[in-house]
Image (cartoon, rainbow, N blue to C red; front, side, top):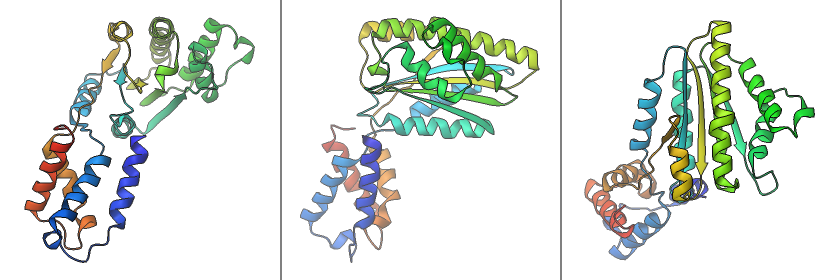
Length: 272
């Protein structure tokens, strides 16, 4: 995936051992560096995404804040990196972040039970209810809420959402049954324990695009906020190259060399 690809290109850049400035490198080699970078550079800018996230978090109430962030087509757009950024931001809001990553695989149940089975690993649940989706959900929700304290942030990340099927049924269940009951139970727990600044956040990570019908169903819920993933602008590529200047040349790239590479990469990647 692009996260691994980004790490690989960083390793390649760090291994470049040029003995002179790029100014002294033939144009043919300079073009080859440009080609290598544009093939491997994750074409993603998270500024717009993080602005949406921050606005949502800043709008949370004093007692409870809840939202579901929806990221679509994340595989070609390095969505994993954006999720990491969101997690880092949440760390700034609390000292009690509790990540609950949900991994849907080919070997796991690829329906509602797949989500519940994964979440059950993090809480104490009565396994005798594992075949009853209503009671199983209640057990898991109860286990999550049992751990809440002032400042708690529950961070549920459902990866490979596209593996779940049928999508319309899973979406309806997650929003109307699981999520609504989780928020209701959380609010009751806050009242009982007199808690403040509790946040319940989920991420739906769809590696490819949903059908228009399923996307409309998902975004029709008030709890869901879509996170925009957009390609890099030339200024973002310029900034990225400046960060790797010392890796590309012992003396570092000059401003004009960075500008040249940024324009070239941006042009060859369909202008972002």
